[in-house]
Length: 177
Image (cartoon, rainbow, N blue to C red):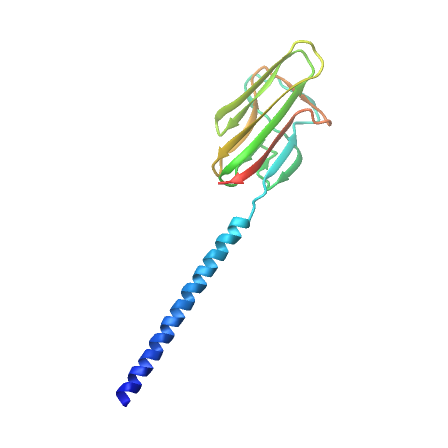
């Protein structure tokens, strides 16, 4: 009888331990699945638009110059640095960027869009009539976290902006990868 009671007690402990382990496995799986679901539903919001300046003409410069779009219109996620003129990708994903640049004097206006230190887009406009002229472009880019996007004014080119925001740089995260 003592032997049977001993086996029964051991079996109860074993079953109890197995149930506890199974319960922990289920809880762990539930928490893991909950964590994944929480992350899948979390949506990082990144968007910015900035005007160039209220000062009028920008350039011409003797050398290519990064443009500092200092008039922040919106900067959700704070990925655009208005003091340096640089957007830094906070996460890996596909981003959309656009720009419009304007001038009103005869001559060349244009700009580069750089991805890190590589030019991706170049826009050029010869304003041969005087009066306002503008150029625009847009691009979708797959960026890694920390990649940098900026606009640059080529040497001897000029742009114009004032409180009406003729020259604007914008971008936003389409989706994370």
